[in-house]
Image (cartoon, rainbow, N blue to C red; front, top):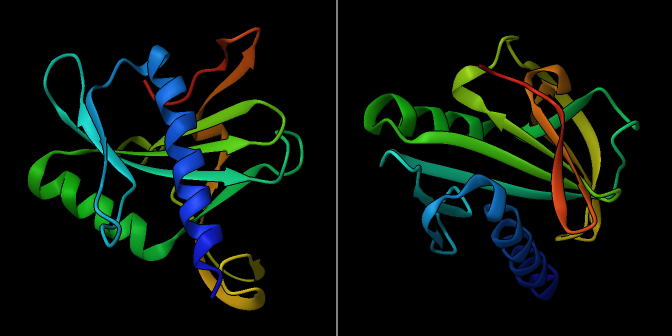
Amino acid sequence: MNETYAINTEQQDYEKLQDLNRLLKIRELGKRPDKDTTDASGYTQDGQEVNIELKSRNIGINTFKTIYIENHKVADMLLDYIIDHKIPLYINFLNDDYVVIFNLAKLRHRPRKVNKRIWSELYQAFEMAKREELRLEDAWIYQKQNDKYLLIKKGWQ
């Protein structure tokens, strides 16, 4: 297992989130413990707690019309939403300076369950993975240009 890769990736994702937070304005933004389901948490301007899962992807915005998330992460984040009213945000940083943000509690389309053969950088091997397929049309999409985040597409309302 490539633990160095996992630690470095999580740190880079969190640094990207801190930069994006100039737009999101999440108060008390902080990293979650290593074994927690999500990567970060904080509070909206009106005091509602937010759970955040982060993912950097080696794809561009025009590569696919969907984004995958692990089944157990959806389940855990939605249970936290139902029980504790924590907003479940899934934030994807793409390699072409696009950011794709899903509020899992406000999807307009039910995610499709898929089994995919994927390459795991963490385990340095291919694996069969169970994922939920989220449609980009359910996401807010931003593009980072000149150190600013420009809204490209609105998602949930």
